[in-house]
Length: 194
Image: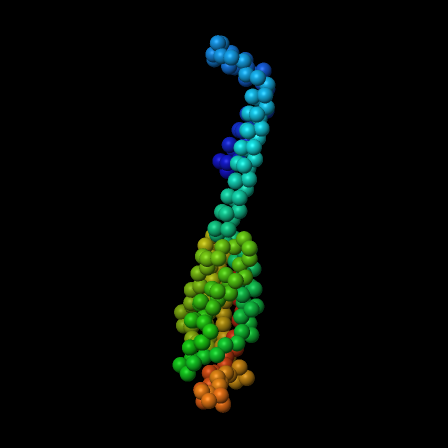
C-alpha cells in the first residue's frame, strides 16, 4: 500500500508546472541559476518511471500476500475436489494392514488438498486433525488451513476389494507367494468440524 501512495506522490510531483518550481526556488535561494526546460522534462520522465515501477512492485506484492494464505473459497474447492478424488481410491496394504502407497489417511488427505489448491493457494498450511475413535475401516478428519475461517469434516470408509489385490511375481519369474490385500475408499465431506 505504501508503494502505491509513494507512486501517487511521484505522479503529483511530475504534474507540477515549471514556473511554479522556478518561483519556489527563487524565494528559497534568489541567487540560484535558472533551470532549463530540459531539466524539467527529464525530471518528469524520471518521476513517472519511478511511479510505474512502484505501482508494478505494489501489484506484485499484493499477489505474493494472496499466495501466502488460504481463502475460504480456495479451501472449500480444494477439499471438495480432494474428496471426489478419494471417493473410489484403491490401494494395497501389507499383512499388518498398513497402506503401501501412503503413510496414513491424514497425510493422504493433506496431499490431495494441496494438490487441488489451485494457482493462488499456497503449497502449505493445511492441517488435517483425526477425530476421536477413528479406526482403519472408518475415520473422520477435520481439515483447516492457515488464513481460512472454514473447517470441513472429511470421512473415509475403507472396504476390502479382492479385485484390487496385488501379487508380485516370484523370484524365478513365476507366480509369487505373497499377496497384498486391496482396499477401496468411500469418501464424503461436510461443512464444520468432526
